[in-house]
Amino acid sequence: MQAVDGAQAQAVPRTRGRKDHSKTFQSVIASRQGWKQVLPFLGPAFIAAVAYIDPGNYATNIQSGSQYGYMLLWVCVASNLMAILIQTMSAKLGIATGKNLPEVSREHYPTWASVLFWIQGEVMVMATDLAEFIGATLGFNLVFGIPMVPSAILTAICALAILLFQVKGYRPLEVVIAMMVFVVVGAFTCEMLMAFPPLAPVFKGMVVPQFQGTDSIMLAAGILGATVMPHAIYLHSGLTNRRVIGQSPEEKKRIFHFELVDILIAMILAGFINATMLIVSASTFHTQGIVIDDLTVAFNKFGDLLGPSAALLFGIGLLSAGLSSSSVGTLAGDIIMQGYIRKKIPIFIRRICSMVPPLAIVISGANATYALVMSQVVLSFGIALALIPLIIFTARKDIMGNLVNRKLTSSVAWVIAGIIICLNIFLLYQTFFG
Image (cartoon, rainbow, N blue to C red; front, side, top):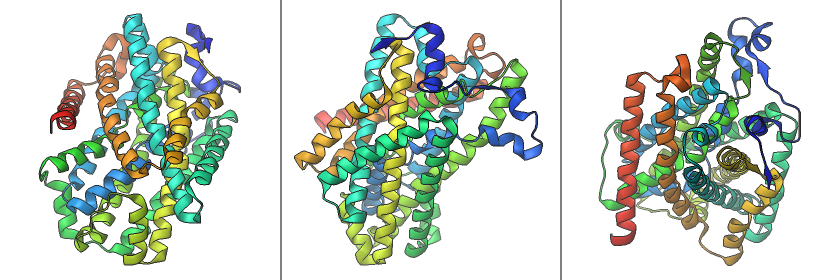
């Protein structure tokens, strides 16, 4: 590991292995008119949004839909609304300060606290990598019939290949990831048309909050953990802090307004995908009295009930989600380490190290879907530790300037944090005493 001084730490997430691609606001919009001005700002939210549609979402949404029908659909909707607010605050912090969340935390917290935050951040990244890697491995296995161990090796090769796009600059990586996101959107849109769910219960599931026993609350926490991802909170601030630099408070505010368009488009797509996963599972499996807690079983049952094309679409979506999200955890881990402890390791070495635990799980023959669901439960515990500092910093005018949170924004964010903490306490109790 190498130490990174204060000036370097801010730029490293954008500069390793290539030139600094940062641009000033005026240079970006000088030759653009109308809606074209927003184009240079599209991209960061799509990378962050990948964290909201990774294979962990497949596991929790498919199980929730098959076991409880449309009942927990409102959790997907609520989680997505939370995600929009949280990612907006994260992006705003990067734009206002020119620093990512870990860097701002390091400046305002003692060293020992930064070290603890770094350790828990790395644990969250490991849980994320587990879901992404196993999901992509399952995708190769289901779509191409390749055994799990060779599929895992193929996943490792593809994950490293995707990171090569980062060396060429942020735009190639964003384009590749956005294309993969639209593959997932297309796959589940087609599946929903095949399943043809009834509108009335879907609408009721979206707007009527309800639970049915402790298992439904556990799954709701899993959906929340799979949707509001802690590493994405860190990541988004690192994707916007050096992308386009505002020279004045007014320019920073305009940059934020452009970035808000990016966030809304990407998060709405992510919310649509999550809701569609649960709806397709409910209309296909729950109506038949089939409870699915294994993605391989889901793939086979889609083939039996909706036809081979539905199974293929499910597998392609899973594969695309796994591969597209494979680089996101690595990028987040890079930002977390550099921000909290001013250290860095080569990004490819980080990725190789992060692939060891899921490879071990695959080789051991453990249940991959169970590992996916448990990884999402682990992730739900890290949300508050990323979210609370974000709320505190974005509510401080001395840090944010004219981009400081409104009182209503901070109040809603604290309510969200409270809900998440309560769910975490419930999960902890159920895990050890339930």
